[in-house]
Length: 350
Image 1 (tube, rainbow, N blue to C red):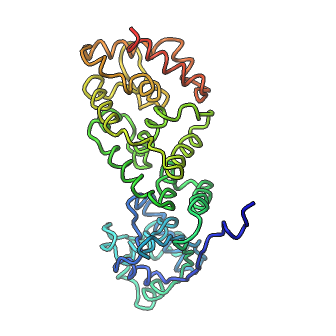
Image 2 (image 1 turned 30 degrees about the vertical axis):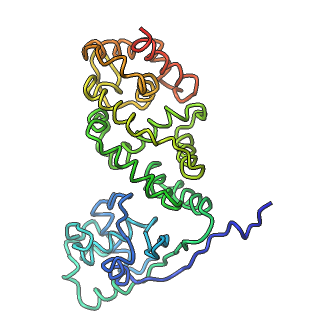
Image 3 (image 1 turned 90 degrees about the vertical axis):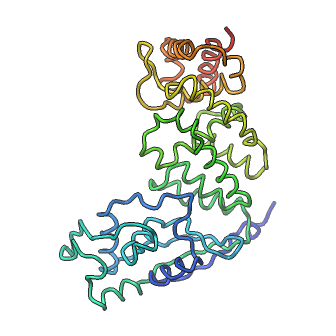
């Protein structure tokens, strides 16, 4: 049995002032805006109320940073809080508009004010306000660090499941390369065309990157599906990162599949159908069905006219059997296989 000590994470607690964080960010010693997280999800009112809380000397929750291979610190939790304050102190350093306070209901007189409009003593007080930073040292067990970040964030609502995957993968050697590949595939023009029915708010939460991961999971990890999509995709990513599997190596097949979808089916391949017409947003159950049935088999369909393909697919989507396998309770392995088989029978096995 491994000792508890062998799994301990080395951390260091430091109190940084917001002014210090600003200077460290300017100097590139702390990465406040990691590429794998969106900068802002808070409204101006939420950001303003944080400034109000600091002025009232209310306690601010700690932030978490991880030390990378070069000793640079990357912010992995607390992005909203830190960025809001830095935007107020110097909006140019994070390429955001100047923050004008609004919605403050305790110090209502500060509404409409900018940083420069406060007195020198208030400005210095803001810059000198400390915030506790927990630094996760670069040495230590990768899996434990990965699990730490996942557990730290899973209970909250600020990050989506895919954002948590993107950030937690950075705890692991090679995780940055994994995420770069995910980003690159999600940026493919054919993929974006084929998945354009994903709403913009979901894209902001990295739903497109989750679809890339789901594509490879459907192709290579279906046997591991137990009904919980989040756990299935988490496990798939963990297999890639910890077991060094090559499940995402066939990028050429990915690109060829979405080129076929974009050219033949446009944005209709993964959406519900009514009277032969696609409608609504992309449905993940439909995405799984088409990927599972057609990925790797598109060559046999190249000569089929686009309208014939669309008609066959919409006819399949409108059958009682497909609806039964994609409606309530669709997240079971049996129903996933049924959906895939129905599409395959209609388009590939004919």
